[in-house]
Length: 335
Image (cartoon, rainbow, N blue to C red):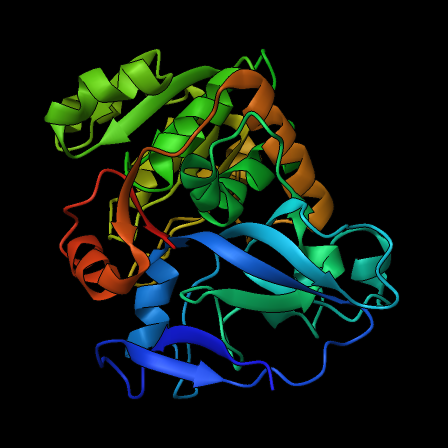
């Protein structure tokens, strides 16, 4: 009987240990993928620690997967054996609801995450519904493309939904695992791009990634000077900030969008929202269609995650470095 070998957490916060499981019969709509690379996402750390209360142990983390299709189910027509594909946070959806029928599978109430209540990508293989295995363009290196499948789509999708274009003035808050990719995509869309960071040392790098301007958010004067400047601000950070200063930085009809989750509730005054028709919103990942589009844009415009590679068996070492923010900017495990 087929066995998949991976690295599993057996309890909340435990280090990963070798683990085998039997995936059972390949379903008609599934593909099996031999994994070459898997990104280490902050969501994996939360799942290992059971911070969200949804983890079931033992489980294999990992949801920024790239590999080659080795087996296709009897009903799969979209993929072929040997094809290089990527899998992100989502591995299945109902395919029938109003959201799936609109190509917004990421909003499906029955959506299945790749490594929640099932085994993910810190392994030699994985099985997913073929609709959620997306072909990877030849020009993208697997190591640099893997983090795009969660980190990349998390920032790409809201930029597309909110119609970012050459007339847009965009701010990216945080130059880390998400923000360094967001700067690149915002620049590709032709926007005027400003990086917001608490680290003045990141200015040169932020500009190299695509920022036209840089704001040190520790300087109150610098934040005051950009009041009324932005059509769209994307916050990628998991830290508390003075969110009113970002609301004031928006132009009329501007939007502050969260893809990072601050630890405390976001508190703002209603008046600037009312007077300037400003919006506060959020965005989760993206659909398989949007993933395909994003990878195509990345391939044509040279967008890539900055990565540090680790052998798969050193996953615990990679996790520790990510926890301590010692990786610039994404760790990737390689088989």
